[in-house]
Length: 108
Image (cartoon, rainbow, N blue to C red; front, side, top):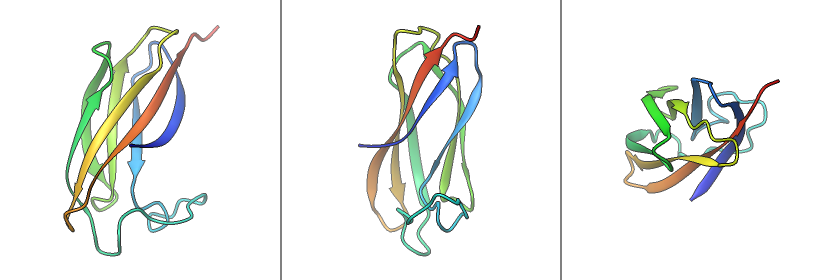
């Protein structure tokens, strides 16, 4: 499983997180390469939460079906690291798992 990014989030946050499988094509400045091949897109995906306290409110495809956006709430225990895992199947038949690591913090 590939961890895409680690984010700190406040314990009351309701935020969206993006898994971009074609960051170079999608114009991200820090991108080195795309995971998807040219012309390949995401055919299906399944997001899951590592803990019942972290809720996946919704998810959708973006960037011409080369990225996944997951909206998340909950996960308010500051001594717990949470993960959003996403299983991806592409139009070329490739499958892999990607993960977003979420670290809750208390804002002062």
